[in-house]
Length: 116
Image 1 (cartoon, rainbow, N blue to C red):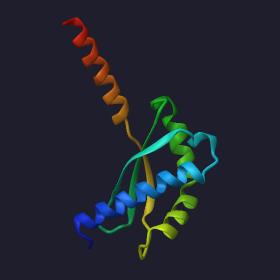
Image 2 (image 1 turned 180 degrees about the horizontal axis):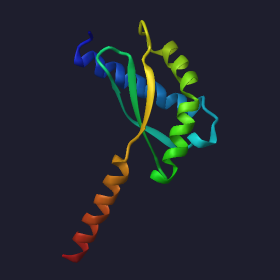
Image 3 (image 1 turned 60 degrees about the vertical axis):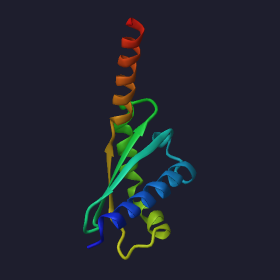
Image 4 (image 1 turned 90 degrees about the vertical axis):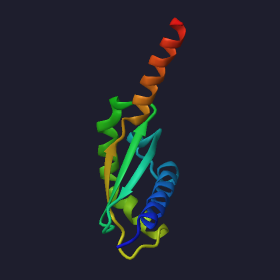
């Protein structure tokens, strides 16, 4: 089994390459203006959980996840060519609400600052 540091390096490389693929290679209109927030790989390198978000927020989350699932085979093949691993992990996509939550908290803090 790979060490935790190696798993993190592989996850970072997959995130970087996947972000580039989404910008350059994918023409699906459902996948416009999205970004990869995190990638987590299990210790056996069988699965890569990819967390994504969009500028518009959660209203497009279902549409985006469906678009990513339909492109998963293509993305996995392209990533396997760029990231050298004996067996490339299966991609699983998840919605990441963190950017929206951070924006919401920032708005609340801004209102509190105005009241002072």
